[in-house]
Image (cartoon, rainbow, N blue to C red):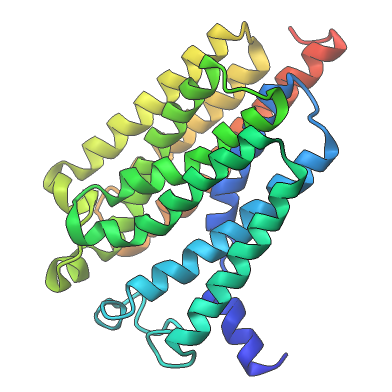
Length: 291
């Protein structure tokens, strides 16, 4: 592979799919919930590709925004833009190309979803700059990531029902929890360079607040399941997710960087467990075999 191409792919985090999976699983779950079973195949394809493209664009603009800080953070000092392996101009061109690709995908979606996409794009662009002005950038990331679920509902139904906003709240709570875990990895460096985060805001109460956010997310998703009349499979998936949250608390017990990072990465399984529960519940219910 050409070294420059490898650098572009690294900037897009192609070598680290965790972020893409964290966005993909809840987005697909929202599609299945909105369709009450298998959604149209083209929507699955569009949202899957869109997840990859927009997450990659988000990584590029994030590194561009943090290019002056990343050199002072242990985990990020070797990133392509900070290390000088790619220029600021090249990074902006890549961001524009990825954004254009995402825009082209909107051709396959209805007008409401296209309009909602503009809001999602704005949230994704402003997120990297929030850590300069507020200790709640994780909330902005949660708002941006969860917006894909709102778009998923709109793409299937042509409107955004109340249940979609309940899903949105549950997703946002979960994302703030796992991005706080991520911020705990960099907290010492962030304090030195002046980056703000919920990990810094919560301080010694960080593990408690992450647990509270996780419990609130489980409760919200449970309320959503009850509202939809879901049974065993949905709540089993949610129970597995809750069990993984408990395991994450164990991983974070000493607040070590490796432990917090492992806890963050474990959330890919949380998302998959919830998605699997949704698929089994809606698919088996449609087939008339759900308990």
